[in-house]
Image (tube, rainbow, N blue to C red; front, top):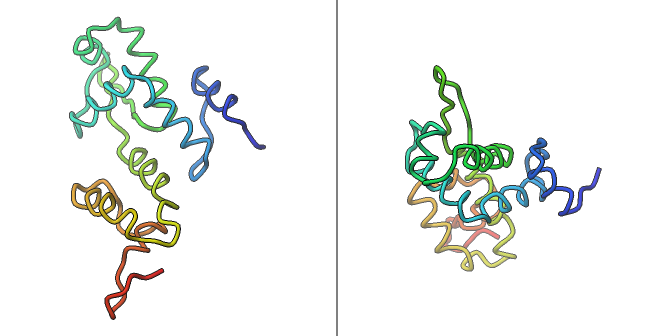
Length: 154
């Protein structure tokens, strides 16, 4: 079943489960979720509080926003596979889904080189240095591996 962009965005907005791994629809849902200023701020807050996470009420307090509004934003981030929720007593604790974030970054970089590994070398090197990229498993990172003779593998 092929979904168009409008259907995918509608799914995220109506709290339906977004499609599987390695799909343009998943990337669209994640970018849509991060494309709103409040959700981007919430996601950045969750990343900065890894690995402990934050209670939904604490996020609402820090955002100076009503809890129901923040809960709606968190639900969209969770459905886009960018946030994970768990119950701790009466509170719901949210954490950044780091594997989801890594997936989005790797998805965006997958074909960025188009055969020229130097085009993405700086960004990939920085992402590896700060731990945001998995070991070389995708095309973009494999392209940056040097052959024994010093040439880049293409």
